[in-house]
Every structure is written in structure tokens, then in C-alpha cells.
Amino acid sequence: MKAARWYAAKDIRVEETTVPAPNDNQIKIEVKFTGICGSDLHEYTHGPQLIPVEKPYLLNGHQGTTTLGHEFSGIVVEVGKNIKRVKKGDRVTVEPIFRNPDSRFIASGEYNLSEPLGFVGLTANGAFAKYVVVEDYMVHKMPDNMTFEQAAIVEPAAVAAYAIHQSGMKMGDTVLVTGAGPIGLLTVQVALATGASKIFVTDISKNRLKKAEEIGATHTFDARDKDIPQKIKEVTGYGVDIFIDAAGVQASFDTGINSLRNGGTAILVALFAKEVTHNALNQTLRELTIKGTAAYRNIFPQVIALINSGRLPVEKLITSIISLDEIVEKGFEALTKDPSEVKILVDINR
Ligand SMILES: [Zn+2]
Image (cartoon, rainbow, N blue to C red; front, side):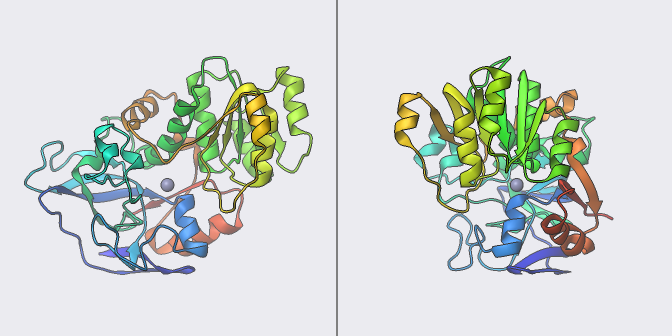
């Protein structure tokens, strides 16, 4: 079968590889659509980040050249003999995070905190291919009228939904999202669906701010504007209740902290590439809560139900659908160069 395989930064090859076979506890899926994620882009531009190159991934022994792709949908074509949750022919989407069965975090349900962190498509071969094999606990059945395109966006939507859930956001709250990439925009959609009254969005790309307005952001700002906290306070009176950092740089962090109301909550969802400095006394005196969120846990069923209800129209974020052969030029390169691109899906059968 054909697959998009990572060899090194700037070296992804679409080439023939072997069709994977499931063990007794695995499920083989014929892939329909796979989204290109920001983390795939990181692997492409300056990887390896999560791909195990130096030593094998502890939970499966995977190492080196890796078929990318962890945001996907498809049809079950084969199941291992211990599998009871799904059967051949089921339409599924996948929660690609690995769980270490020996971790203390499994019993508490906090499986996203079990180490070492790993995902299908990064620490195992993924879904930029005709077939992929996943662990039994990763699959979620799709509702009958959900499209395969929608189902391929459940995974990044779960990142956004988990961030909003962990923020403790309440109906009527005001929210600031810094960064209008796919995760930032999905966070805007989830905040709206959860009952936010005002949603502020910052980004340096005009196109992405326009997209944010199209999907329901009430106020948008060029991220380079130094007066964002004051402007937000003019609108809200005392600052936003919730700040979600989906940009992950010093400037976005500062803008967000300075825009929060006293007693407000910041959620760090972005993968910060560099360290940021932070005024701890300011946090103490203003009683700010600052929390990180790592991927997601226990939220796929709710996200699937919400997308299926029509109240989380994630398909609006799809800007291109391409073939596997086009993945480098029209996928990775386009996302690097063209700020009007948001979510690009690969149609594996095109
Ligand atoms: Zn992703």
C-alpha cells in the first residue's frame, strides 16, 4: 500500500510499504480521511519531536521511519481475536493516544498522563495510508449520519473541548483565545457551543481572524497590537473569565494573562517551543489559575455527540481536501506558506 512516511525533517516520502496486520488486541482500519495536524507540521519542519528516532517507543518498540497521520476516520476491516467493542464494517474514528497499562494514572482515568506520551502516527505507524492498525481502546464508533470528513476532525476538536472543559467555563463567560490555527478556531467553536457570551481572538494573520469571525468570534485583534488587554477591558469591564493560549509564545501568554479578570483561569493548550517568563506575584495577588492541558481524556463521546448534533460545525474549518500523492506540496508546504489554509484533509482514496 501507499503511505506518507517521515524519514527526517523536510523528508516525507509517499511510497510503497507493507500492509499492517493486527495482533489479538488490535483493530485494522481502512482509512477514509486523515487531517494534517500542527504536530505533523512540526515533525516536517524541524522534527523529530515525538517520533522515536534514538530509541524505540517503550509501549510497542516502534522506531525510526514513521507513517504520519493521527486525525482520521475509516471502516474496520479486521479485528484481533480478543476484540469485542467493534466488528468488521463498523465506521470509526480513533483516539490515537497510547495508554501505558503499568501507569498509576490508568486506574484514576487520567490515561493521557501515563508515560511515555505517544500517539498513533508519531510513535506508531499512522493513517496517511490505506490501512492502519490501532489498539482496541482507541476506537470510537461514529453515529450513522456523521460524515467521514467530520469524523476526521474529532481528534483536534477533542483537544479544544478538553481545554474548555478543564477551564471550568460557565454559561455567559467571556473567553480570549490567542492563536487562530485549527486548535484555536476549534476552541472558539467549543466555547460558543458551551455558552460563551463574548469570544475574543488574536492572531497575526488577517485571513485567520476573518475565519474566526465567520465561525462566531465576537472581537478579533492583530496579535501585535500592544493595547489588547485595555481594549478587552473596555468591552468586558474587568477582563475575560477564561484565557486559552493556542499560540504558545511569550507575547500571547502576556496578552492573555493581562487580559484576564482577577480570579480568572488561563489554559495552556499550545505546544510552547520556548520557555516563557511569568510574574508569580501577579498570579498570587490576582488569584489567577494557570493550567496546562495535555491532549484529552474521557471526552471523545461528548465531542462526537456534539458534532453530530450540528452544534459544533467543525467541517467549516476544512479549507482543502487533497490526495495522498499531493501531501508534501499541497499539504505540508501549503500549511507552512499559506496562512489562509486551516484544516487540510487527505482523501486516502482519491
Ligand atoms: Zn493532532
